[in-house]
Image (cartoon, rainbow, N blue to C red; front, side, top):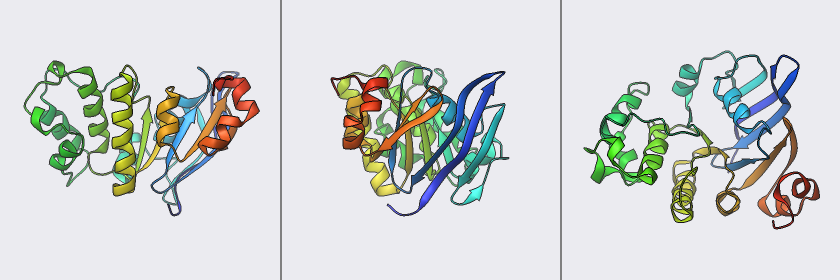
Length: 235
């Protein structure tokens, strides 16, 4: 891993007097997979929204490859190389797998959808409507949509939600491999600790909208503040 690719400085988001995110700093290096964990309501999805430009009432600064992109729209950030996925699959059930990716490619000139389909093992189902493939395949398609155009930063909000353990770990292996070969920087919100600990280089822990701890997987496992707030004694 080399220098910092995505950085947030003093990121906050408020709803009236409630701080969903409160002055959070984060910096993720090229090719790193950073886990983002914490209890429900900790601010994880809010942080993803603020970084991707989808959150109103936000403050702070977002840097992408050293460029201040705080004022850019989500579409402009996507063209700069920042992509994201959502907790729910972002697919159209009546469109085929290939058609979904063609739609995504409109926003990223020169995108090679054949490469993405091959990497996510979707080539054989290219002509099948997305509503007819399995939920696990739909999850991989959702990841493929975010990977169109080889973004430099991938913000993933619970990509393994609803998957079996085998499917979750399979998706984790794909992410780890792509991060290594494509040098994609990943910020991953995930509740499945087996997935998080199996692929993440470092972990940031949020609690009540603030950064509680940051470190390697080994460090986070034994951090007493993290154990008390989220992991419990079984970690």
